[in-house]
Image (cartoon, rainbow, N blue to C red; front, side, top):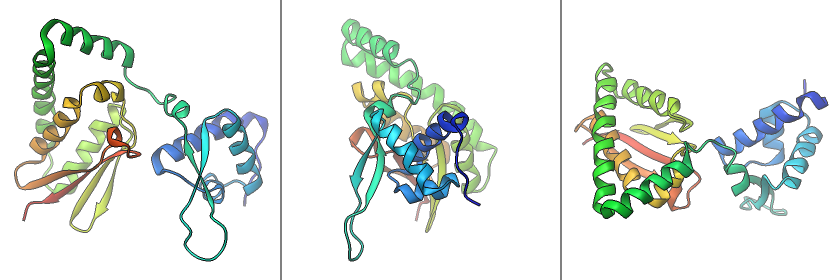
Length: 217
C-alpha cells in the first residue's frame, strides 16, 4: 500500500531521492514514487522542494513511442557537493604545493608511491578469493569503505565494477594520474588472466566510473 509522508519524514525522504539519483542516474517521478513506495503526489511534493533548492533539475528523456517527451530528474552540481569529497581542499593544496616545489615529476612520484601501497593492500585482499566474482566482491567492499559508493553488475562474460561517487574528485580533476593509478591497481589485484577496462569515467563527463572485468581470452 502506498503511503503519504509526514513532516517528520521530509528530510530523510529528500536524502533518499538524492541517493537514488546519485546511484541510479536520472529517474522519472513515477520511478521515484515506486522506489520510495510513496504516492506519486508525495513524490512530486519532494521533487518540487528539491527543485526549488536547486538540488535537482529536469532533463528530457528520449521518446520511445508516440506522445510528448517525458521528464527525468538528475542531480545539480550543488547536490553533487553534498556527497563527501575526502578533504578536497586540503588535498588540492597539497598537490599544488608538491607541484610548486618539485614539478609535475614530483606529483607523479607521490602518486606512484601511493599506488604501490594500495596495490599491495588490494592484491593481498583479493588473494584470499578464488573465483572472479569473489575477487570483484572484495574490490567492491574495499571501494565502498573508501567512500566510492561501489557496486557490481553482471556482464555477459564477467562483471561491471561501478563507482557511483568519487571522494577524490577534486584531486582527480587536477591530476588524472590518480585515475590511471586506480585502473592499474585493479588490474594488479585481479591478475593477468583478467582484463580490466574503464567503460565510464566521471572526470570525462559520465555520471559515474565503471570498469568491465572479464576473463582474458
